[in-house]
Image (cartoon, rainbow, N blue to C red; front, top):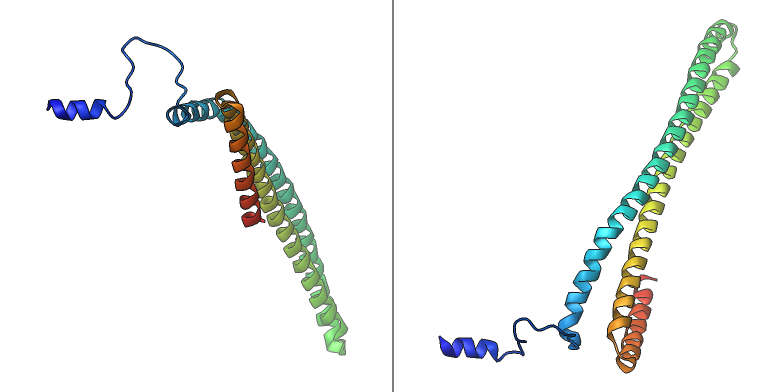
Length: 184
């Protein structure tokens, strides 16, 4: 049992109880620093993120309401077109007896144009909703990435000496270039 305890204690340096000082071992401090930075980002970034999402939600809801109003207008136009269609049908019955088929073609054109207009408005609404959602997601991603990057850079700047700092920056620039090539 004593050999097991001794081998565990010999794996690393354990400071005496009650001592306080700066740990300059970068491999030991980076996970701690990163967890603190991530904790702070999550704690403080949560409110910003929820505000951004609420604002996006309100904009999207407003866009949906506008689209619904446009849809309502299109439905009113459709109802008017249907009334006109019934009127045209009555006239067509009257003229059909006389041999006029021109009214039938006008009726079909009217129906087709009305449905095309309604379909275009519906497509516009769906495209607007999709566009707003994508834009909101991209802005949130970008803001979270920027905040995380600023926090990480602040931590790195406070913990690294000049030589190690320059090597880390060079390595990260190479990684970002590779990521840009992959995603680009």
